[in-house]
Image (cartoon, rainbow, N blue to C red; front, side, top):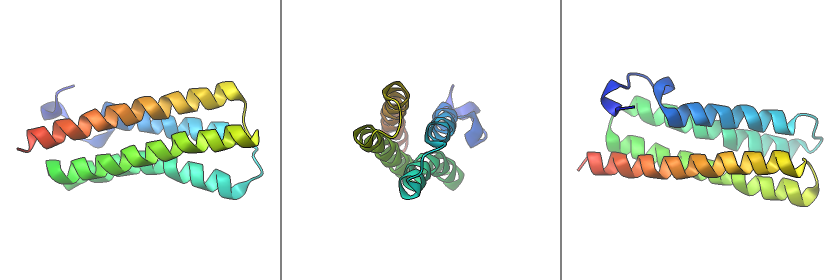
Length: 122
C-alpha cells in the first residue's frame, strides 16, 4: 500500500499486524497465574500498536519513525518474554513459537518501515 493513500493508522499493515500480535498475546496468556508476567507481556504487545498509532498521528516522518522504533522495541520485548515463558513452562511451546515468530516478523517489518520513513524525510 502506498503511503500517499494511507489516511488513518488502521490502514497500515504494520498496525494490523500489531493488533494481531496483541490479540494473540492476550489469548496465549489467558489462565496464567503470574500476574506481573501477564501484565508485562500484555503491556509490551499493546505498546506496539499504540506507538504505531501515536507516531502516525504526529504527522511528521521523523516523529513517526521515532515511534516506529519504540514499537519495534516493544515487539522485541514480547519476543524476549516468550523465552521467559518457555523457561518457566507457562505456555505450550507451539503457542510460544507462534507468538515469537509473529513478534519477530513484525519487528523486521517495523525496522524496514522506519528506514523508509527516514529516507523519505531527507
